[in-house]
Length: 255
Figure (tube, rainbow, N blue to C red):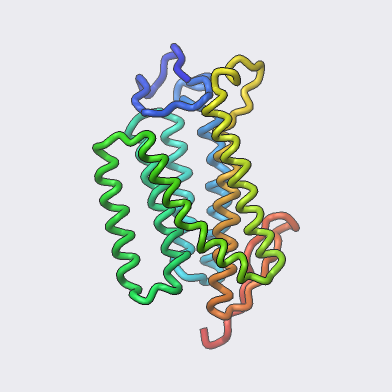
C-alpha cells in the first residue's frame, strides 16, 4: 500500500503491491512482514538441503532445496524494495522452481532422458529473457497456475501408490498448507480495502509466505521419500525433536 514516508529505494516501480503499509517500520524495508515472513522458508530449505547432502540423495534434490532458498531470498528483495527488477527476482524463480518440480516428478518414466532437462532449461531461459522486458501481470499468474496444475496428476499418482502412513500424511499436509495459504493470499488481495480499516492487519500475504514455506518443505520431503522408494533405499519418515519430518534412508552397500 502506498505511503508518503520517505524511502531508501525511491518510488515504487513494481506492478504489484500487497495489503501492507509501506515503510511502516523502516525506510529500508517497504513491506516489513511480507519481507520477514520469507525467513522460515529459507530455514526449512536449509534443513532439507542438509538432509539431502548428508544422506547423499540425488543432486536434483539439493538443487530443489537451493531453488526454494533462492525464491525466498528473491521474494525478500522484492517486498523490501518494491522495485520492478526485484519483482523479477521473485517471479522468475517461481517459474524455474515449478519447472524443476516437473522434472523431478516426470523424469523417472521419461524414456528420452536428455530431452526433458534440455527442453525445461530452454523454456526457463526464454521465459526469463522475455520476462525481463515484458511486464506480465495477469498473464504471469495464469502461466504459473498452469505449471502448478501440470504437477498435480503426478503428485496424485505418487500419493495413491505410496503405502507408508507417514508419507501420506506429508502429502496431506502439502495439500492443507497449499489451500490455507491460497486462502490467505486471496483474502489479502480481495478484501484489502476492508482489512485496511481493521485495528490489526492479519497480514494475509505474509501468512501465504509462511504456509508456502512449509508447503515446499512437505512437498520436497514427500518427493524424496517416493524417489528413495524407487531406488530401493528403504526410506522412512522420522521426526526431528518429534516435530519436523524428514526422510531417513538405508542404501544398499553397493550404492
